[in-house]
Length: 447
Ligand SMILES: Cc1cc2nc3c(=O)[nH]c(=O)nc-3n(C[C@H](O)[C@H](O)[C@H](O)COP(=O)(O)OP(=O)(O)OC[C@H]3O[C@@H](n4cnc5c(N)ncnc54)[C@H](O)[C@@H]3O)c2cc1C
Image (tube, rainbow, N blue to C red):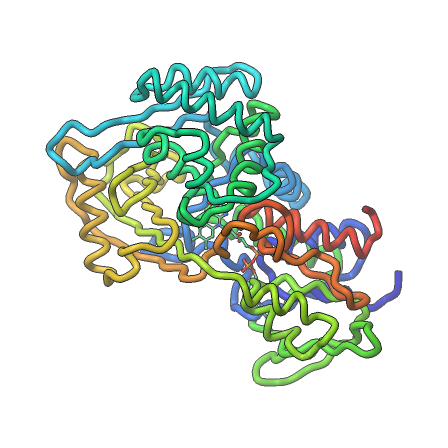
């Protein structure tokens, strides 16, 4: 180990994960983050007197690396995340006069995958043919060992396994949109099958839903930064990396811009932990990295919109989160139940759609009507806030894993981390964290 720091570009969850694990192994790290805050696409923002997130996030029990990392930096998992057994309620068209259709899937305390099987067999809102189709789906996935030789879209997978309309629109599609942020007609069946396997087939705990009870910055980035600094590392915010220099196939220098001042740092180990669209600018000039550059050029991106609606105190859902189908709103979270923000609801709309053409006022009004339809007496809307993340995640399209780069590059000392690297996960916190840890292991040689 030499005295040069390992330079990490980007203080999102991937960059911070790499920094924490390297710090743990005695390495000195220096992080450069272009924004004025850490956390990247998973961070806290202010709405009036409330701390909310740049987008409502949900974790699951299968996010083992994420949870381990939080423990390393001193986060108490049980008090910072509300753990719920698998319970999915999806309501169709709540705002219409017709009694809305409800699908309720509740897993009992049986070992996996029996808990899922039982939940499907006993689910409210499914007919006999739906239950048989759902079981057929599970068996098909198992028979194929959760991986097809030739990737297809999730919609084609549903067709091949003869899924019914209710299953598609009230169960599978909401699950695909929330986990992959990609429409079912484009989403990769292989990635979905991997998510399905990890969430439902190992341990019952894996499918538990974990909702943050604190802001996302408090959940990990803030504690990670304290941990890194306490162990001698440096974190520079508002510090964009402008370029990296590679000489004779070895990374040598990183040049930053801090307060309009350019500054160069010598280092032989760099982890680029930016989003893919920012990576391109840093590696464009290097022939040795042209494959990565080419593949990143094939990526597409999907938005996620979160609409926060503030209702009078005491306005409460029957559960912390409810799915909605045939509406613009997809999932509604009652932050009064898990975040002590009485009357505050976050409504998540994944992937592109007509809502991206609406202005904030029109979208808020539409979403408010849908959410108010869940209550017998329509609550009055007091305040609202819309957060649009236009490039929230890469599109998790068919064959995406073939173009996702590895953590190791062909340049000595240059590594990649980020949710888009080839973790086999969709763009998630767990994917980001795993990629950071994998990049750190390439430096510590602990693989
Ligand atoms: C609205 C929304 C909702 C989501 N919901 C969920 C969810 O419910 N569950 C889940 O698991 N995941 C969810 N995700 C996905 C998850 O947030 C991301 O997968 C994860 O945060 C990506 O982390 P990352 O570190 O790979 O990238 P990023 O968070 O993009 O971090 C990259 C960092 O690099 C910095 N940077 C870029 N260029 C430079 C440069 N030149 N110099 C220095 N710094 C630079 C950026 O400012 C940024 O901070 C959601 C994402 C969004 C946007």
